[in-house]
Image (tube, rainbow, N blue to C red; front, top):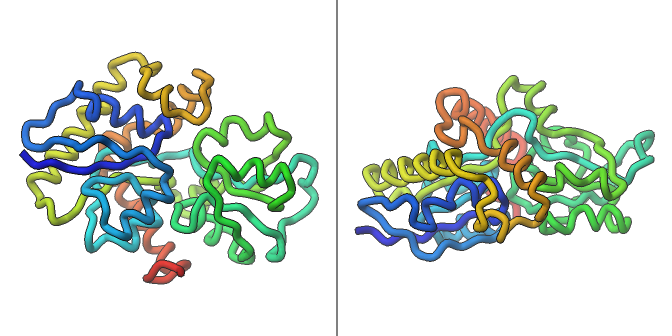
Length: 272
């Protein structure tokens, strides 16, 4: 029995996906999981570059740099249409175009959101990296002129007097025709193909269990940044879909295109 470490975000889509697996409703025959680590995706991105975990959620941007050590699993991903990051600013600024001099908040250097902005708005280069939950407050306070929001913020930004400048996911879909690959689950290649396939199956089973049960599981609400049940349900509905169960040919094609364009934009090595 292999004992594996695992990390994923506290966001409702991840806790929805992993609830059954980490809380004993799904019990794999050939591996066990150490107590899970729930932390923001940029921390997980950094840890992946250090090789800290056996199984980890990470941004598809970060995975570009660690593919020698980690392999993408076909289950557990956040990938789809109409679910991309949003570039936002204070309401009432629609006539003003953000320039290269304006500070823009990003939810981490290695997030997919950061690389998408560089693809869509290459003229912007004054970035401030903040935890995702601090981005809206930074824009509201004037600390930054704009920010790229992810996760629950997508559903609540208008309530805080903010407006969208650009839907980066919609830009990607129009530009490429592919769904937008946001984040995936990766496992150490050194675990071997048999264990990796077992992990994939267990995650898929955990997702099947989640869809068969009430989405208002205490484990999900316990870790959500936004506690409103309707926001949690909308979050799960947007980010967990058929691609989460199995990326399939369409999902893998989207990932490969993101990596192709991302390598051209960011280069082969992580930025310092």
